[in-house]
Image (cartoon, rainbow, N blue to C red; front, side, top):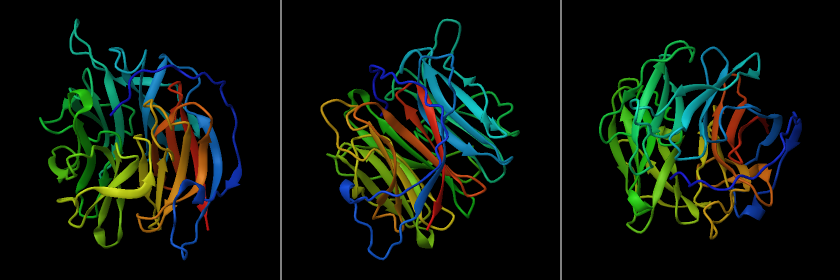
Length: 364
């Protein structure tokens, strides 16, 4: 679900690079990792905003990808405010470590008199080097539809937009993963009008990302789940971690390359009904970026804190870095990747005004 427009918390621009080694205990957040697991130390290399000036008032729902040319690309939606018809998809990319000026790459213009807001871009580059931009267009999450564009030159130019087939929305918030078999798993979900029903599913492609079929993630009827993120477990097993209305992340497992999924059950990670993202490292460990709090009376309660957690088995998690820890504010909808050099990159919404980017390494 995308949260409704809300007041903006105003903060001054933080122009700094922070070099630090940070290790925090997870016990205060209620996580218990196996006693035999050695927690890595997160060394923060850079903390910056992707842009300082932009042609929009608000922004949200960033995504980031490490391109074949060694550079980074980030994307997000921006406009007057969420749900406004002028909300469009923007991108910025790095050149020699510096972010380019934001450029609009997609919008919801249907014709001269009809225009809709855009939502939740997701960048993904398949093993053939084709870069996909998935995004949604429509008045609301219950009525939107999925589209995509492709690029064969690392985002320098884009194909015309194409609508995904009925019943397929594309990745709703988080990046797909590509299996050793070549198949692609795209984490997705649906929401009905008035938010009465949230259901998660995985969309599966066997042709590099052009056509898809669905596999539902079952859950109890009284549990709402959306916005999966996927991690890889040993023996080709896959776990989905899901945003829910239960004050914890839910989780589901697949033992057949995403063809079928177990019923979603509560994980050990508390969460205030807010988007998360996770990633499996090259060494087999897992990282999770999330808001480590419980929900309150207002939808934005709990989003003033944002943590990075590490886990070996996908079940137990321990916080290793506090990305944000404020009394108020919104730091939400994170995206996390590992680049070709092994560095970890995280982007997230910073008070709906900017996109924050942090870079770190892990050391045992």
